[in-house]
Length: 115
Length: 115
Image (cartoon, rainbow over all chains, first blue to last red; front, side, top):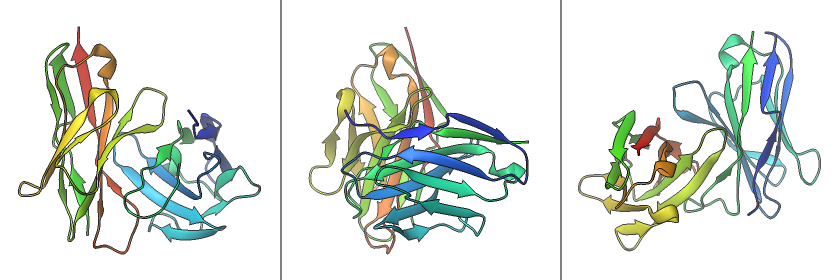
């Protein structure tokens, strides 16, 4: 069964540093997402991406965040200057469609630790 | 606005017994409802969804969920629990009347099935 993959599984960085989290969505999916989950809290939506542009973003997704699909397979989330409160598990997801009834397929996550 | 609540942080059940994981929601229009499961070190996996039609929805691994509009609930059920069902379960909702295609996730319920 096709899976969403994410690298790295764990990233440790110092406050103020830039990090790039990478994802390979399922190959025939057209819609891509990033979510995060701070330990013990809800899964929070960050951004959705379609046709090489952002479709929706939450208030969490401020100017320090950016997303990119640099080639036909990768989907990346960049955090320009990390803060302690960015420490969380970051999940990438993809879906075949975008209307409300389409389920999302999630990767295993990248645990980001900012020190 | 859409919201979802999972009132139990943890559910304990003995193997072979029926299990229920509760979810209630709030939307303005018709709800699109989803259940996902997360095993350790894995991403969220889609289990089942309710879009329209029969209130009882069947999904993967023998799970089912019942949509109850009057009680605004979408509880996940399984007639006979397995130890391997132990995992974190997330309910999600999307408001069919809203402008966003992004679902809101609950906080998650940890299901522990004892041998």
